[in-house]
Image (cartoon, rainbow, N blue to C red):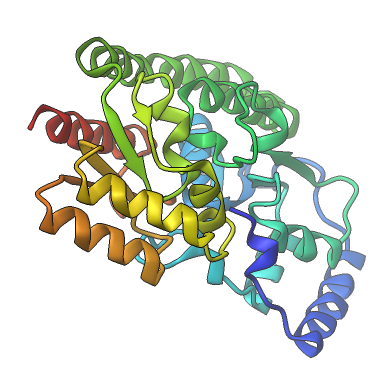
Length: 302
């Protein structure tokens, strides 16, 4: 999703925020962990925040900005408090790739050459065309975890061993997710499915699912645009003619068009599998992904 096309900043608020943060940054920020040994981290999205907590343990203090799965992340607007938190951080983690350009605006208003910045999209090895949702790939999240660990070691070298051990634990915890992907592929490879947008392609492809929804439809929804009429007709026909077995539906990118597809699928007896862009509360990255995979597997088995 391209946040920059959907996020609006009032000119006055941007100027005020930038001036205020410049004053803060003039006071200087620590180049490493603070005096209590805690690395201050700001994550643009809560899945990166959770990843950092798992890797840093009690040696990090993490603030996640986007954390409500019931809110469309494309409507996010920054505020002064967010800017203050970012200005005081040692490490900022964002997705990049055009997904959360609002964070770059905040960082520009609080320049700090000693603050570390990590962009998941830039690090990811497995990138799909026109698709910024790299955290939905377990290969990518493992690579990003390595990069986060490397930054934590730079900021707090005294706790390097802890960070390395936590990384190994995190990497092992991804194995059941990878195995679930393999299991789904072995049972359901080639099954025709529909997607309301591009986010789930990072798992649908390794699962061997046959995505029939026109990519132009998925991409338009992902970018906050109205799909072309012919793409909407094709996606609709795939449901009414029972060409797809399930519809995978992004609950955080809802438009009248996607709502119509969801209702149409339900009325035609086609299972709808919800997915989200940010983690639900009281979960971890691993439990969030596994819950979605289990729901998908159950729907495919119907």
